Image (cartoon, rainbow over all chains, first blue to last red; front, side, top):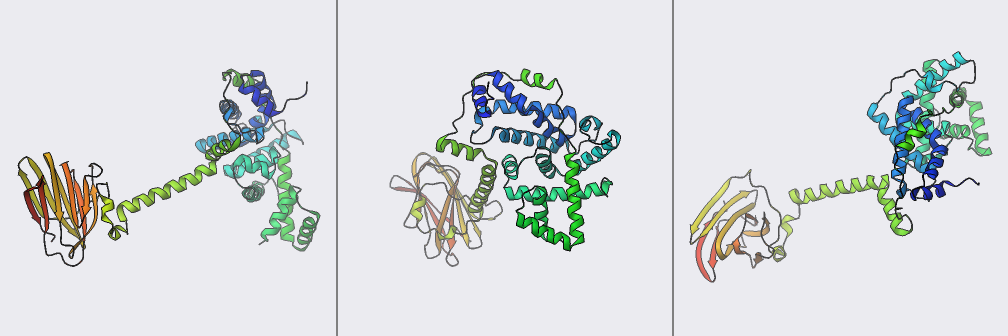
Length: 180
Length: 257
């Protein structure tokens, strides 16, 4: 069976087809969970946020405009939900982030763990509007244009924000000793 | 301090978006400036560090949690095609809401400005247009009463007060009667020019301004305030007359100063 396009699945969802929604969920659960995780740095909160995002998406599915990509629309909900959460909770405590980033290491485990922790800590130091551009660009590989759509800002603003965020992150990594 | 253009080129280089010519320009610049070279190297290392982070798998329970929290049923799709859809979409966009908020704020400021500080207030010359309409209702609470007359006769209950403030004379009146009456306010047009009338309530058309007279007709004028502007120093009093039919039943004179 050929893979159904997102837009077709949305149409089927609107007719009450649970299977179609399950397919969308399987397709996007992981990236949405990771956006949330990278923004809030807490597994439980990220899971709650992911759940909220998909519930919201289902409830608002009839307002989705198929002129846009479905994942952009879904990311937008995820970003707004995460940013609202961060705003409400401000700075998240750095908890056992070994849970968060473990398994993503490419070098010697312990050394890498420390490096990733420092990196995550530095990312969390960024203000949410800068953090999100780093997350979308470097962890989700989205284009400037897609980021602009998701964040509802002009591409020019995306660029300036991303460039500034990278520079801030660079300074934070130098300060933390992660880079010399 | 590095030029902004080169900072942008560095970022674009990292994203793989530079043209060959831009890459060449950047390389030339980096070769000429050690500070810029270090900045670019650090930036590249930062991005490389980010590449070491991979996606995590969501908890295994999450999928079922999500599915169990949704009630699946057919939904009517909102119209998104055609100009209605585009209009609806525009209304829903954040930028529209932002502009709408700015516009609404500006409108509120404008309305408040007109209510409290209308600079054209004295330029109202076509006073007949104000007939019986709710207009400006000035706050007189901070002014001293210049003259006050209260009448109670033939079932008519009326009160007239005058106030003065910086070249303006305000006549506040309220007349109630069991039957229709006509209340006229007369002033000397060489001394006082009618400006506006403000009313707390009233019926459309029950106050008319004609030939320098302010005329109320009805059984309850409600609280009304007539504003005059002084041409010179108003020496003559303002006259208030109350008629029943064609018969003058009462007249009062009110000092402007």
